[in-house]
Image 1: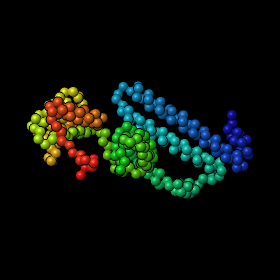
Image 2: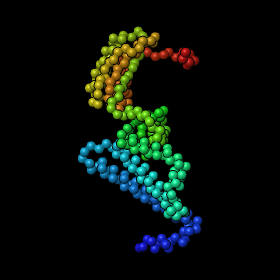
Image 3: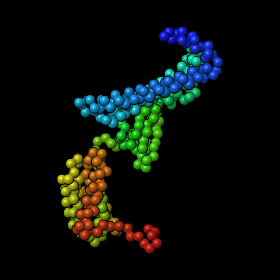
Length: 278
């Protein structure tokens, strides 16, 4: 089929406004369908990379690259569609560099470009990946998605925070490397501190035997504070971030259980009548 002849046949019908609007809608529908197909291709390609590759492939980095590729495809094709629709209304010579620059400036292209460049920088420098826990300014949470323009965080409350990449200047990534976990327990005044210390040392020793992803400790540190209600003792260790919450919770439970078995009371602030703490 001769596409030039087809276009010449359709062009007279598109000279009126309704025809141009219909053509514009068809262009965007076609581009939207193409984007969905390419997104599916990217997703399947990344899955096959994880399955077939004999070497270790970080699944979180694969998800990050997949998210950025999807974003790049969407922005590029929608930009192409927008420019093509302009040619329908103004003709092929209607889009000059000046007009494109004016439109881009009008829609805030400076911040748009800054977001994209920073998004590419985050990927190349491997600052964080999908699935990692990060802190950005006053926001913190797990990285749920990454795009060329935005990064999506999910915090502990389940709230979704969408942050422009251009606003990400300083990032704290707590998912990399190791993390300290610690438990502090206050032994009530009048109880034997020596006995309590022996209990905590034994708990730490038993903990090292039953948990195989420890990097250091746990070990009894000592007395960290003295108050009217009693003395506070600390046990701490180090592990990978993925095990941090579990290990700290396990250690806390083991300490409380051991102290209870030895009938050692823990300190607490008394609640006066009326339920108001002075």
